[in-house]
Image 1 (spheres, rainbow, N blue to C red):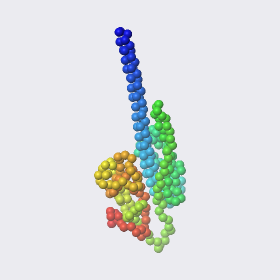
Image 2 (cartoon, one colour; image 1 turned 135 degrees about the vertical axis):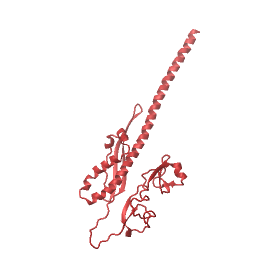
Image 3 (cartoon, helix red, strand yellow; image 1 turned 90 degrees about the vertical axis):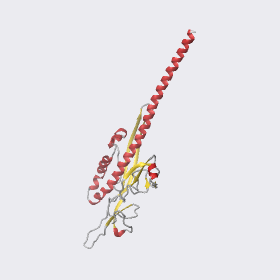
Image 4 (cartoon, rainbow, N blue to C red; image 1 turned 180 degrees about the vertical axis):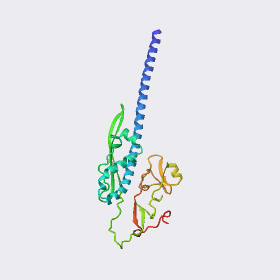
Length: 258
């Protein structure tokens, strides 16, 4: 009888010990898996941070190209200027230091055209990311991207006494009106981050240019009739051109067209 009870106790102690070990292993694996998904989310944020900085750099270089077009030697510093502006536009440099080989200096713009012969700023960026989760994985990958933007080159002509330029106005790609104010909010709208539910409650439709949002976050503008999946949609960040009023047949903007 005593031996039987003793055996039962030993078996109970073994089962309890095994269950404790299995529970510990499960907790450790859960921690590693959670860490893995957390870093995956941070990598997605990293991609967005780099894309946004590259977009703003492309926009800056599109305007800077006017200087390079009119001043000899300015194009020699295109790459240094673009590199410095890219770093200044980074919203979360800590993410690059954490995941990108070389940190904020690990994103190369080699291969970019600032601008190309056909007047297009083509900003190409390349970087290597590393994901290191103990026990689970140690991954590394090279990522690339390209952003294109029309350069603001302006026109070239020789001045003479009979030359009379027309009134200058501003239009954007796909414009249905012209603007007298380059900073008109119809041209450069303020962007508000909101939820998909709120956007739909305002009876806004999905933008056909940037597609469906990946989550519940969308972007809307003060006077817009659609919601956007990204705040860098081409309908928000528009290529603005200065033209002669006599060369277009568009009606004036209701806000700045006077």
